[in-house]
Image (cartoon, rainbow, N blue to C red):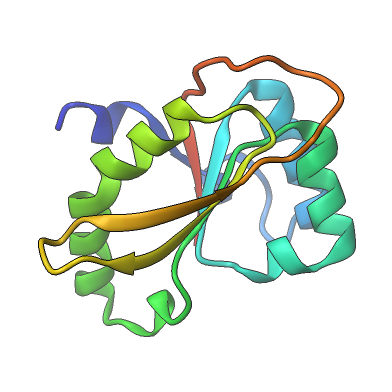
Length: 133
């Protein structure tokens, strides 16, 4: 899995602590990054949702309850799921919101997508993934 170390950036490493979501989201869009987060509130708050759509950001929201797991289990799941998440991001148009719904018995994840009907942007590969935890 060579891409794990090559295509992820932690938002916390790029922006000062307590930077508002509506501040860093447009910058992520300008950089052409996708976002993976367990902060499902971003998809529910009108200002944050609007920022994602206007910035044409591909976003991946982890399953409900994901952050209640012990830290080592979270890390193991990220490593296990990273190839599936990366493939899903590469297949969708900018502005699409992906939600990790569940894990199948074989360990694969089910990802549901909601395509934004944004007025701009064609399908282009996104790299890297910006991780928000």
